[in-house]
Amino acid sequence: MAMKRVLAFCVDKYFRLWIRNEPILDKSQLFPQGQAFEDSWQQIREEVGHYLESKWQQVPEFSQVDAHQYDIANTDSHKWKTAIVKMYGVYMNESISPTLIRLVRENDQTISSALISCMEAGKDVPIHKGPNKGVMRYHLPLFVDSGECFLTIDGQRVDLTEGSGLLWDDAFPHGASNFTPSTRVVLLLDVKRRLPWHLNWLYERILAALRQTEEFKEAVRKAQIQ
Image 1 (cartoon, rainbow, N blue to C red):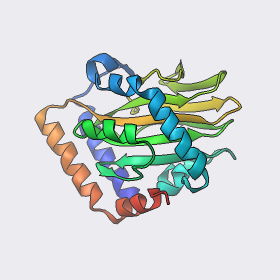
Image 2 (cartoon, rainbow, N blue to C red; image 1 turned 30 degrees about the vertical axis):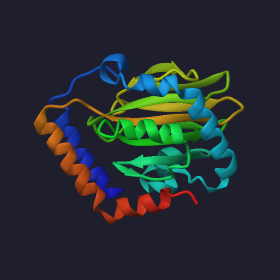
Image 3 (tube, rainbow, N blue to C red; image 1 turned 45 degrees about the vertical axis):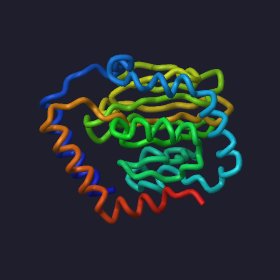
Image 4 (tube, rainbow, N blue to C red; image 1 turned 90 degrees about the vertical axis):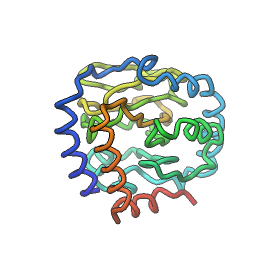
């Protein structure tokens, strides 16, 4: 979404003046709530698995929801699908996983977005950067086959393990690879940073403005799974 990228660019430039951190973050210190998701990961996995089995054809590809992701999502013939349950504060597709929805709602003020990311076998997402440093990315693998399935974050390879969460800053260059014979299914959460009041105020105002754009409303419509 063009408006999203313009707003994100402005915020990112300002936020970088205030925020300094390593690419991989301490989840126990910065997102202790993640432990509740890890404690329930098998139940989330079971519910998500049943949902995807029945709805796979209807789950949209990432670039169908946000056309600006086309360049990184369509570099090969393998699909990258996304089942979104919360997008910048707007809930949807709540039948994906009752357990997941409950946990996200319990942390409503902390989690701005939540989705299930599904990368088919052989999918390789090239190096790219997230739009801004207003949030941290929490990554909880639900279905990961043995073999070559990993993230590359600021040049560092991070292998994925089912049920083991990872907190990181996606404003650093990163990519994702699934060179296994099975679809990789991961829960992604955008976790709000603990910011100085003026940065928090700015970020919330920008999110509010974003939610009023036609581009965002169209993305919400496209993300609905029938």
